[in-house]
Length: 466
Image 1: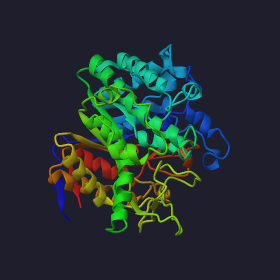
Image 2: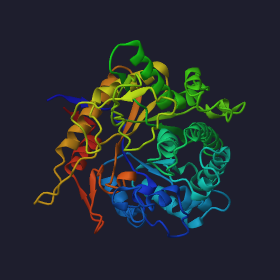
Image 3: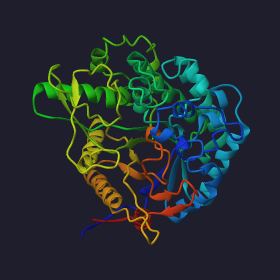
Image 4: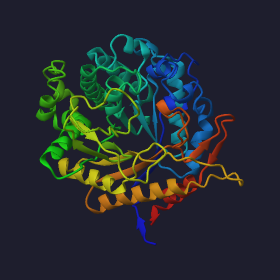
């Protein structure tokens, strides 16, 4: 066994999202979100599950914050529900909703935990979707107004403001493949959503810079590690096309101040990108204090000749529609195991590869792993414990991969395990469990899994035993 030591300044945390854990969907003035509508639509989620109750965090937050403190974590990444604090997505703010997050932030500070607030984790107010959703420019402008309200209310008590969580999912899964809310299958709309999410990030980031200059600014991207099935030029071009859609469509405007030319060319048959106005890219490129990286699995592609059978193993659910707009000539290949309960391959070296790529492409940009974790079929043993050895192995190997990248110069400053609690896993409902703390959905009882005890040791000692 070898031991790696992390510095005291390294941040260990956990992460959640509002719709996945809060419940209280119709309490204290909360409005309706696209995920309320989507989950209540028959056939959209496993077992017809919804986030109406979820993990009841809205009522049990003091207990959940106690768990965070007992785990020895230095930071907690949560998201603010837009329809809870601004029902309808414009106009009046809801005092009860703002007060809930104010109490949450104060509770974290009282326990010595940094609040890391995500402004948007997919719960768009339904009224804004009815008016066009993210494909409409107006939604980005409403997001700027929303950001101003929550930053004003919570001030600089929030240590880090994260504008968006995984805009790739919001745009492509929500508007192209339709496997996430709002469930639309309109490729051109998905690309417009990409831009308006990017624009929302830039506008909200500038709000943070103005209203909370002492706070750190971040965005969280689910960056893809894309590999080709062979060394052929055709497969290399398939990698390039997916990299443009998955990664550079967001990194380009956010960090380089422009969209990649090859992305615009690849997607020209779908849209002319006329929704990008003069000055937009400059607005989007607000400097970041930290870039959040979410990583779970890698991607394997090949060029499709148009005749052979396709595997379409993109890992984003069965759908007649692809999230990969403008990449119909790319095939996604299944990868060898082991796999998690999500069917995702387990590939820790790909995380090292991703972090080193970011170090090379964006030298000097601090990084943070804002989500990493795994769903497995947890079993409550006769002793009442959850012996989730596979999750511990997953976490150990990925944190080791992160340490490898740090040793080679990647400026990774923290790690947030996904997730603190078992929760509503979007289209999979309550059928998948990612938490290091088990939630009994009948009683709402919380039980630490073995992985929670393991993670507490890591967070409190800074020692990774491999």
